[in-house]
Structures are given as C-alpha cells and as structure tokens.
Length: 211
Image (cartoon, rainbow, N blue to C red; front, top):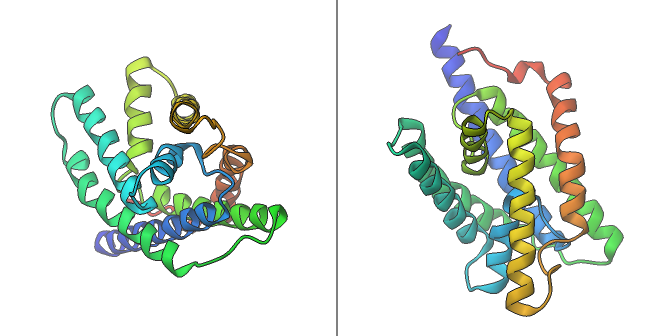
C-alpha cells in the first residue's frame, strides 16, 4: 500500500509539473501579464535574450539561494529543487514552442490567459496533493512566513505583491514602461488562481495521496 501511494504521489507530482508548464506557456503567449510569482521571470525574458523557461530557471535558483541564505544549511528538499528548476524551465520552453498561438485581440488573449490559469491551478492542486516538494517561489514564501509567524496565505500574498512591484519598477527604470510585464493578466491570475485551486480541492479529493 505504501509503495502504491508513493507511485501515485510521484505520478501526480509529475503530472502537476507538466500542467503548470503548459499553463505558464499559455499565459505567456497571451502576453497581457502573468501570475505575480512568475512576473520577474517574464520581465527578464522581455528585457534579455533569455527565454521564458531559462529566466524561470534562473529566478527559481535565485529563490533557492535566498532560502539557503535564510536557513544557513542545505536540506534534502532544498537540494532537490535545483534539478527541478532546470527541468521546469525546460518544459516551459518546450510547451511555449509548441503552443505557437498568435493574438487576435484582447478578448482572445483574456480567454487564453484564463484557460492557462485553470491549467496552472490544476497542476498546483496535483502538486499539493502529492505533497513531495514545493516549487521554489512557494517554498521561499513558506520559509519567510515561518520566520515572521505568518500563515502561508499571508506570506504568499506578501511575496506576490513584492514580486509585482519589483517587476514594475525594473521595467519602468529600464524602458520607461511599468506595465511591460505587469498587466490585466497579472490581476486576473492573482484574483482567480486561489478560488480555482479551492474548487479543484473540493472536486478532486482523490489527488490527496497519503504518505
């Protein structure tokens, strides 16, 4: 039974990573702003030769190094995040290349982005249910929350706000446009991701696999 549960957890976690990569590729293709947790990577892909997948890997590794600086000693889960960061960035680039979707107007872009958010939310639900390893941005938010005694929801909100303001400030300084990577899509992602995950939590209880 324990072995069967482990196989399920690994399968659900892997499926969650794939779904998140597909969803992120969809939101980036919409090009009206991405989720706050990925907005710095999106900004880097706009301002540098880095692809969206490569920039995501870079920032995930940066978040891991910040965790390491805070914890001051490596943990097994933290070390596993390094190969995960590279693999996740690679998957995003693969699906971004496959989803060669061209914009045909704001309504089309909003539909594409919202569909991407649904896919991302399903991926997050599978990853949370598998309970193996948090993604680096969420792991950092959790680490910071533990320091200040905050609940995960509060620390994640604070993290997302800081990331969004940093992205806006960087693009404002670099190109004079604070909304180059922060847009209506960022607002949509921030507003609907939590409720959609909550809905999937109620509808898909089988994704919670016991350890």
